[in-house]
Image 1: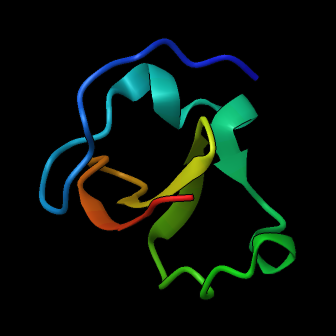
Image 2: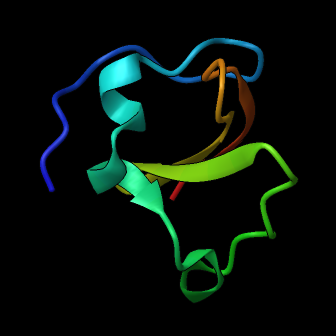
Length: 66
């Protein structure tokens, strides 16, 4: 999956809406050795990295760089 270079993601920022679409959402977070998402959050893969975001707002809680 190709993601164009964009802004660096940081805690408290908002993940762009287009990156919160189903193709980017990680359902099998265990396979990537990620912590279980808290209620109301989901993991999103952006290139090789992972971002834990609030489902409703897209606010970033955690960034895992790979």
